Length: 92
Image 1 (spheres, helix red, strand yellow):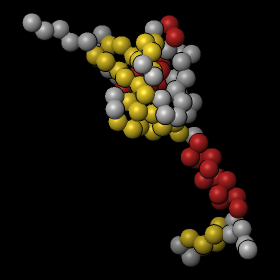
Image 2 (cartoon, helix red, strand yellow; image 1 turned 30 degrees about the vertical axis):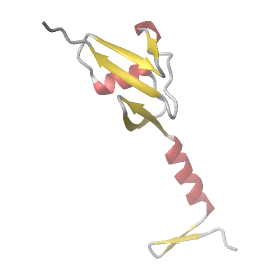
Image 3 (tube, helix red, strand yellow; image 1 turned 45 degrees about the vertical axis):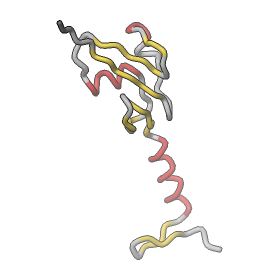
């Protein structure tokens, strides 16, 4: 059995598969407010907030645990994490 794959008329060797696996692992898949999202790894709450730019005031939960602002930089996001960014709204 050969370790090459054919795709689009070209043969790809075993290194093609390794490169594909590396590309897939450079993303983190999370659930943000109920929707699946892929973001670049490594990812922290800080990078997610910077990308999403929620309107203040807001709160962030990761896996049902409140993340306090001083911990944003050190709270890494991992595959399967459930993240909620909740914007506070006043009303009457």
